[in-house]
Image (cartoon, rainbow, N blue to C red; front, side, top):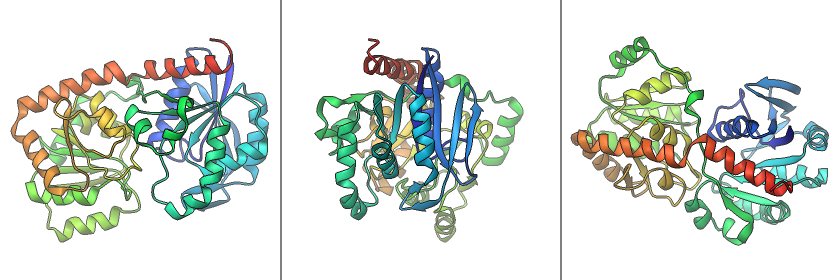
Length: 372
C-alpha cells in the first residue's frame, strides 16, 4: 500500500466539522485504490500515535496554543517530520498558517497535494501579514485542489495559481450514515411536528442564522436548528426577543437523530452569507437524502450543489425577506418541492459520490507519484 499523510489542525473525534468529514471520506475511499491514509492533527487531549479510525490510522500532536482560528504545537514539528519521512505523499488541508511553517521547516521532499477548502475571509488584517508565506506555500506544492468550479473561478488566490489548480468535488458515502428505525422517526415527528424546515451546522458568524431567524419570523413557518457553537446563546436570545414559538434549537445531535430529521424535513435551508462557507457538507447531505434546498449566492460550492430552479432556490445573501419567500414557496408547492428533491438526489448520485471523489484523488496521487 502507498502511504498518504493528511495534515490538518483538527480531526475526529475532537472536531466533527465538514473538513474532517471530507478527510475521512478521502482516506476511506482511496484505500480501495491502494492508498493507506494516516491523519495528523492537533488535540487538547495531548499526543498519541496510531489510533485506529475505521480503516485508517490517526495521530495527535499536543495543542499548545490557539490564536485567530489557528492551532500551534511545538511537538507537531517533530511528529510531522517523522510521519512525513515514512509517507510517500503529503496531503495538506488549507487554510492553516501553522501548517505552512511546518512544511518549510520540515523541508518536505515528497509529492504534495493541498485541498483548498476556503479563502481566508475573517482575519483580513492578519492575512496581510500571512500573505507572503501563503503564496510561497501554495507555489511550493505540486497540486492545489478546489472543491467546485465556482470556487476555483471566484477565489482571488486560486485565480493566480493557473494550471496547478484542479477541481475535485467533495463526495459522501451514504453507507457510512446510520439507518434510522421507525421509533426514532416517530419520536422526532412528535417532538417537532410533521412538517418543518431544517438547518444543520455549526452556529458560526458566516452561517447567516440571524437572517434565517428573521425569515422564519416573516413567514411564520416551523424551523428546526441542529448544531451548537459560539453564537448559540446569542441566537436563542434573538429568537426569544422576536417571540418565535416556531423555532426549535436542538443543539448538537448524534448522527442517527440528524439523519432522522433530514429524512423528515420539508426542505433544507442553508443561509450562509459569506465566502467562509466554501462548500457546505450539510447542504450536500440534504441533497443525498433527496431534499429541496434553499441557499444563498456567494459564488462558492453552495451554488454548485444547489442549482436555482432545479434542486431548490438560490437567493441573495443576507436577505431575510428572500429567504422567507423561498420557504413559503416550497411549503405551499409540495409537488415542486418533491421534484426539486428528486433532482437533488439525482445530482448527488451523478456528481458527488464518494467513489468519484476518491477516484479523482487517487488519479491525482498516481500522477504525482509517476504511476499514471
